[in-house]
Length: 354
Image (cartoon, rainbow, N blue to C red):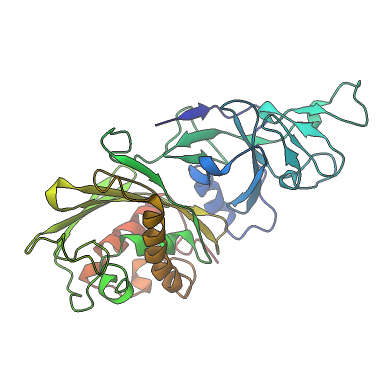
């Protein structure tokens, strides 16, 4: 695993909020203290990338070997998005007047005045960067020196294959998307074209256990996880174990125990673009089928999440009601109830999206 951690730079924001916020101010300040992925490492080349996190437009660019900068996507000169500019792997140049920015977001060149001193006011407002699980993570309001990025089981195990699926955009709230990922009662109705059995909707009893940053649940059933049509790898009577680990606010991992000691771990890292849009990153690792084409993994993962996306985008209210009395629940919803309560313990409001 490659992990690059850079401290929060001195020109980081203090109390500046995004324009046109879709979150309540108090809730935004809570969520902004958490870490989220904003891009795949492999997607960042010489040219800058744009990404919005919690309503804040960001630019991501390379500033030399192994150095990545995340900053407000705004040239401090005349307010043009820097993501419209061009990069060279060392700097990024604004598309309007060619002002060039390098490491730590510092302005290093003003073409109109090449021999003049560059005022510090031209430096970008930047954010800390961590590379982990093949993703680029950041935090808008970091607290402390150690990034609190959720762990991913087995990612560092050399016997496991590391996989970075393409990200998926969802026109829905991150909380709804995560709740769908940990829901075990929808398999027989939503995933019948990928892995589930429509004739097997029963959810056996399971329990949740609180953890310092969320909860976990071990769910055992006879619902398999092989793609539909794969009939030669099952085991009659095999009990499938799905171990969910939820890290509030919007990250969860699922470790699936396959026959013959096979393990597949999926991280569902939902990055809240806004209160109405989510970019979902899904790094995986597994200790079997490592010789199969990665495109097959990408395609199957996309099919599964596309099945979920249709439902998440149709849910009303769009926000996630954290008061558990506001929606009906059944025994199969233990994980959903635990998730909403864990979000409440963060101090978030009962309806923390409008």
